Image (cartoon, rainbow, N blue to C red; front, side):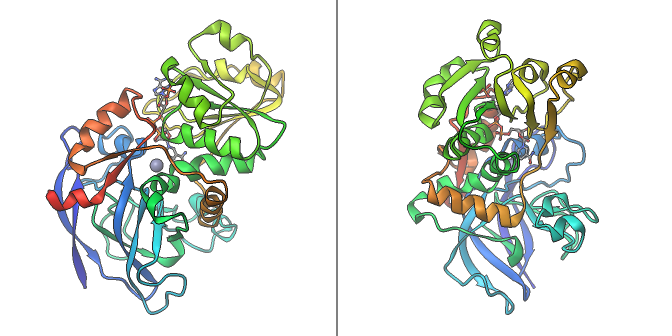
Length: 354
Ligand code: NAP
Ligand code: ZN
């Protein structure tokens, strides 16, 4: 059995999103059905709907920063009850038995790959998965997160499901903490969460930005200062001084200007996925100080729950601008101009007006 789902979808790469209905499965024994209250807008949504990455399946209903209220549960569901607040991030399934899944790193699933919340193969009903720009979603309980923030903060919790975990996971993996100097490149959705989380982990945080106007915000979010990455003199003051740099930039750019700022044995981890590759970094910058250039993909489900609990403990949510679903294309256009303060979140009540 299925239930009609109201949503907004992209039908081709270069047209505005439009109202769309489709059928979702009714919850099976292991499933949780969630009425979606808010959905964050990730730059990955934009990359996908506009066809900037290969392989977009249309119609595409994006959205993987989902929070809402449980409306039904299957007979085997023990972790959730009707009425609970719940979250869904970037994944809705994985093989469950490969070494990465066994380690709780489902995002690195080695057999089938993880099933994306949108644009993935729908392993239950066929076709492809449809995301959170919709009124409800049905997800296996193992991929649903408990939300324990105050209900009044719910909209600002939504971005934690992708921007939060994508920054928390590498900061945690590379053991960021007190006594370390940490850089966050790009002050957007991911970057502003990276600043908050790295500061809460006890590090001294600097923002690298192309937008000098974001300096006061960077400090308010927990950074010591903002360094304008186009200002060669300002960059030179920090040569060889960073323990760790998290690079969230969504566009191709010169990585060397950041690698030279790392100490011996420092690491820069990339999480941004630009449409075209970065120019190749200079090997010399890596070799002479044993520096590392790494990548990181979202985070596992257990780690996502840890991140949510960490954010509750430290009083962290996202800085958001609430939008109506009808304004999604204008929001994307602002995102391309780096004009997001610092995450758009869709009030899903607005779907009813569509
Ligand atoms: P966003 O809100 O648009 O933020 C990106 C920031 O990068 C901008 O605010 C801007 O900050 C900076 N920037 C943009 N264009 C730039 C350029 N040409 N040169 C230098 N800096 C530039 O995007 P987001 O949602 O945070 O996502 C960032 C990237 O991460 C996207 O590519 C997204 O697809 C990817 N992502 C990856 C994962 C993962 O698992 N690895 C998960 C989610 C998203 P300033 O104004 O401060 O310069
Ligand atoms: Zn995302």
